[in-house]
Structure formats: C-alpha cells, structure tokens
Image (cartoon, rainbow, N blue to C red):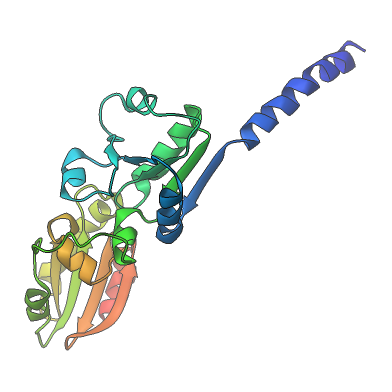
Length: 233
C-alpha cells in the first residue's frame, strides 16, 4: 500500500520533469537553415567555440568567441540569455557538439548547432568574400603539385583534429615506403583556407587521390592504413 502511495505521489513530479525536458530544443542543422534562423532571430546569440586564433582568422558575423577548451566556459556561457535561441559552431562539429550538450545542461532552452561547422559553411558558399587575400597555397600552385607520373595523394588535416592525428604516423611512414608509386602531400587546412574553400572541403581529414591530375578517389573522415593501402594499389 505504501509503495502504491509513493508511486502516485511521485507521478506528478515525473510528468513535470518530462515536460520540462521536452521544452528544450537542441538541433543540429545544415548551413542554409542555420543562416536562415540567424537572420530570423533579432540580436541572435552566436557562439564560436573555437580558439581565439581560429576566431580571428575567420568567424561568422556578430559571433562571440567562447573557447570550448578555454577557461571558465560555463561561466562565460552563463552570461548569455538562456531563454533566447543560441547558435553554436566550431570548425567541423566536434567541439560544438560538446558545447551544445553543455549549454543544454546549463539550462538554455533553444540551441542550434551548425552541422559540419565552418568548414561546411564555407563549402556551401555561406561565407562572405574573406579571401580577397589568398591565405596559403593558391589554386595554381596546387595544380602544379598534381603534375606527376605517379599517383598523388593530398591529405588535408588540422592540428586540432583527432582523426588527423591518428592517421599522421602511417601517412608519414607511407611517404617513404611508397615513394616509388605515390606522392603524398599533407596540407594544413588552417594555413590554406583559400584552397580549402576553392575545393569545397567540408570535413577533416580529407584525402584526395589524383591520377594524371584527375581526381580518382576522395575520402572524408578517418580511414585505416589497411583500407588506404587498398586505394593506392
């Protein structure tokens, strides 16, 4: 009898808890929708959760830098209006996903995360023309790299990218071991922003395999050494 009474006493609190959770909106949305929602939101709160260096190199208009890996993320995030929508993004989506979950824990009611981060934002043409000055390698210089009788494998990576770090050791090893069959070139995406935008690279790492200057194969994301070797045969 006591057990049944406890159940009925707790039922309203359970229903209330579920109702409050359902009132929270947390969505990962494509660049086009992300852009449209920002435009439709007066004084939109836009959080760039990358490092200050990344932010200064390029950021969305009116965004505020709150480094996910910096000091006091919670305290800085709490300064924003939790009842108003908040838009969050990073470079490719890893940090913004964690930040969005934390914002939900902190009590933000509406959270929109940019799918694919600023890489995808740029690849789909939503960035303003920030590349009046070439940042890094030019497209012409890139085409020169492809001029070889061997296969040419281009690896676009970043120092902060987890999968890139896992792949780096065997890519560096393969540069020497397979030098007679393939030319392997690693390009830091953060230092070659113009090229990344021109090639519409929207994820890291990205591998591009060329044969006689024609793109033969492309892979975005982690790939094992075994599977990569198969592509080079």
